[in-house]
Image 1 (tube, rainbow, N blue to C red):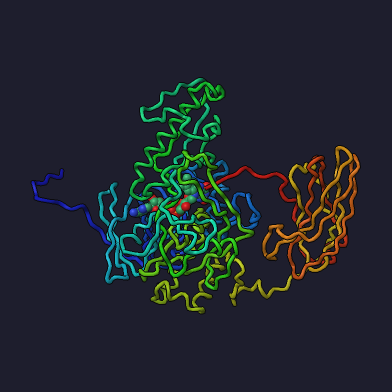
Image 2 (image 1 turned 30 degrees about the horizontal axis):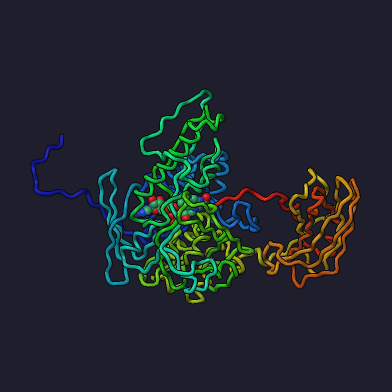
Length: 599
Ligand SMILES: Cc1cc2nc3c(=O)[nH]c(=O)nc-3n(C[C@H](O)[C@H](O)[C@H](O)COP(=O)(O)OP(=O)(O)OC[C@H]3O[C@@H](n4cnc5c(N)ncnc54)[C@H](O)[C@@H]3O)c2cc1C
């Protein structure tokens, strides 16, 4: 039995942990940073204020991890993130093909717990920072409500991956919130005048079919009048989870301190929407549906962005700017949302995709005035417009991996983040990252130990590819379809088959990418308009064009607006591979536009 007499005051249990690196925030960014650093042998404390890891990807919020491929919604479909992000996604695909969010929690927890150098503190909220000088943090303090323990966590290096940037904020690091004016960085997507509006929070819900009719009595706080949502006609029975990303609110509020207010408004909307689906009479197909889950912690899109030595901006993303200190990359669209969120009559997002992936520089992932603070996740040093692309989780994860690896090199050399800008150290960092399968666009590996770079590849036999055999089905040309082919020099002729429902015309365009490393057919080289007769047409195409360097060209094929229904299949002449010596061509690219997905 424990029995204590009255004392004037008590303190919770206190524990101190010293590590090489303290990471605050266990979203994808913080988790990837911790795994990377721990694998290289340094001691890491990873602190997360919630019961599981993953942040917005956890079962508490339930967002899917997206990145540069933009869910096949742009031309970066070969740009899937490598390194730790890839490991997590591959393991999740193996264990969890159904996309069960609870299983995803276990995948991520397993990955972190496998690292003996990580001390994981869950349910522990960091709320205080101590500094030895204006510019240097010595420790952070967190409290775990589950074991009533206060942790003092000291280290020479810290990484803030907490989303709202609690460590950066408390330590006094320079930050921004809300959009920059167009004038500040000359960003065309920025508003004319700077303003405080932000991307809002969202809450998701899931439904399930119970096999028998289920009633729904809405809570008193549910939205009464669904017409307050201008786009309410877009709601469908059975549509749930990430497809309702546009149930968004709070873009005109303080997205740090008003989060609880925003959550109540989102609950109001979610239950109002469900009431509309269940009780308006317009959705008989929802009779057997019940709410299985409603979020209790809103997913936060935007709050503080901290200033590093460089602020990534729209031009870096769209122009795919080259940075000597590139350490990661992004490829998601500039994905901006109306500040009024679900109450706006504008579309839920405005997305602009660059023509390919872009580099993220190291100068954007440490604080410019707190000398031992790395930044990872959505808080990195980017303008509001550039953040609209860097914020997706696979991108946050690759930035986390870069921060983790940089911390390792700093710990080994007793350096500060900014010291890594030394060209020799930067090369070391890039090489160390590339060794872990982490891709940095247009940055060649300088790894002397990379035997593959000097390897001679021979084959015991050769195959001259005569054609890409037709494996069906025919592709309707209601949208243009294209065949990509790698070319170095003269563009080879090809034979294709087109099947027309009636006599018509087809337009064939030969296209390439203005930047040879992209996969976007943004440059028109030649056009041919070809008559088709009803039935299957064998068409021989030849072109005068040639490429200055090895790159892809696209044979793009579209129906005419009057007779759109021609269908295509492609075959390559035998001499194609011999003339270029390049690799197997890819299959026909998508002919249908994927549905709009935002984040
Ligand atoms: C509704 C919505 C839809 C989106 N859709 C997608 C999508 O489909 N795919 C996608 O990839 N991205 C999407 N995004 C963007 C993406 O989810 C975020 O930008 C991303 O999660 C940011 O990663 P992070 O690691 O910086 O932060 P988070 O994922 O928020 O992780 C931060 C972690 O830090 C913890 N933390 C916070 N404060 C403290 C503290 N004081 N002490 C300890 N721990 C703390 C949090 O609990 C959390 O676990 C969406 C965002 C929202 C809100």
